[in-house]
Length: 241
Image (cartoon, rainbow, N blue to C red):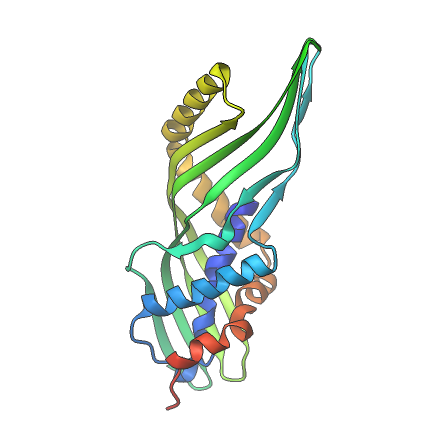
């Protein structure tokens, strides 16, 4: 869930940037603006080393065999991009502040889970290798509101986050041999045929996580942080009224 949460928070950070000077913000093509913002966000994620999540190692010690991995990784969160042109970002101005209602479709161009592993059977031989699970199809729909005040304060709220697509899995195992080829084929079949049935459950868990576990104050802090960083990019889109 941490990986999903980071993706959701990144989505919010992207959407929050359009509130830099909300009361005078006039946009033409929202998609073009969001693409510019996403490019800057990806650079920031790389620079601050937030593009990779580290996972704990896995181990099992049985009587006839043992298995263990080094710490794993989930990457690359700096490959965030829009999924299609159907992006909604509506602005309503009030005295001293503006409210933005958003409905965004985003995903990662590269999303993979990697582990290096070792295992031994009957202490007769030791096998080492690396496994990488890649999904080539991922799409998240994020809905919510962002309130931006003229004095610079902002508050971000994520009402819902729905995984629309998560699939087209590929498993890579190195070094390759016949047993691992069989594991690869079986693993890809299970991932591609079974995981889609669990998307409703994943969405339910994800929304509970967002609404009940992530504090609103911390969420807004993370979502509004890029305002200063991205101010130069947004200046061409901001006009004084």
